[in-house]
Amino acid sequence: MKKNALVFLLVVIFAWLPAAGQVSEGKATEQSSATVAAEQLRLAVYAATLALLSPTSADQRLHTQQVINILEGANGADFVPLAAEGDEQGLLDRLTVLLRRIDRLDLEPKARARARFIAKSVLLLLTFARDEALSVLETHNREEAFAGMLKVYAYLDAALGQAGSPVYLGGLTLLLRILPPGTG
Amino acid sequence: MIWKLKLGVCIGTVLVTGIAVFLFVRLYSAAIEEAFQEKGASYAAALADTIGPWVESGDEGLVREAARLLLVGTSIYVQVYMDGTLIVDERDPGLEGIEMPPISTPPSGREIHMRADGGWDYVDVVIPYGSGYVRVGIDATPVALRTRNAALIGAGVALLFDLFILGAIHLVSRSGKKGAAERTTVEYGPLRIDDAARRVTLAGVPVPLPPKQYALLRLLASEPERVFTEEEILAAVWPDSPYADSKDIKQCVYLLRRRLGKEGGRIVVNVPGFGYKLAVSEDIDADLTGG
Image 1: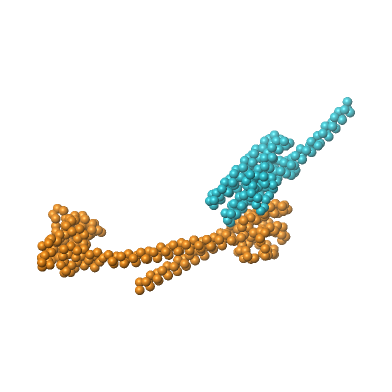
Image 2 (image 1 turned 90 degrees about the horizontal axis):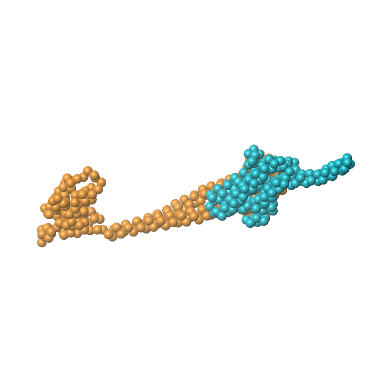
């Protein structure tokens, strides 16, 4: 009886170990994905900054298109190949996948709810940024284009968030802290 | 003599507007060049601010990607130095023949220079960050284009202005001639009024009249036999004098009649209750002309 119990225990332990490894690997993947998304988002904020500071309106349009390219990726409907392209997977895609995976992560319910809420908010902000950037490309009025890019910048900046941002609206910066640390 | 004056005015107008356009273009060019340099500096500063943390963490891939994002449109090269070592050197494919040796002593603040090299006119911006500096070249062709456009617009406006001024001079000169050709002379019986010479003759005899009496006679002669009311006379003869009244009219009529001689009372006729009119009947005409 004792022997059977011992065997059962060993089976359980050996069965659990790979699963634990998978969870850890899953966390690592999500953290890594969020880290890449945060880097992409920083590049998008930077491209939006360049659009706002552009010396000519042609430059402004190019940098606006760069923002759209980063958000949509090479498969996006509004992607236009320019001289320099970043990651092939768009930020919006990456966030959508991340949002789906959060439900499968081994997180405390409260942390998961918070992570989901933040990821959804970030996704929404990025969608606003993409839509506004598209409308900037349609206008030929420089003032309007500048105002539009200012909105794009604000959306992207809010999506990135800061360390001191409110816990439920913290953007990707806070999401990186919620997802298991040290696995990125 | 007049054509010389007109020619002088024409040349003067063209010269003045030419100088004005030249100065405007120079000032405008300087202003947009300064604004362009300022924008170029902020453009490069955005790169320096963004890549700082990435350079420090050794993430050269992101630094290179940020440099590539900047290298579109008017940006022609982007260089990133860290501790004196060139870690990113992205250039426009058409950029050849421009040497950019590393700066031996990294600047403490931003440095902006307009340069012309290898067939390029560009703004060279150097911005320091933590442990190095970024160097960005921005094609200055838009400045030249805007300056050229400003010069063209300025020349167009100047041309229109010159044409307007010369046209106005021409019109004024023509209206002067026309005015000279249309000297009005009113004749009514033995009375003759020459507006241009402000001269009145009655049966060929000059009748010198002071301005008010002349104005009164001219008004009445504009429509002989028509009775002008006192209000009409006051408005025409004393337009700027709100205090003039019927006494002034009577006084003026009295003096005018005296100037016109013994027939004065029959020429400037009072129509009681209505006003005054000019009337030269045939017998007056005969009396005056001795017919």
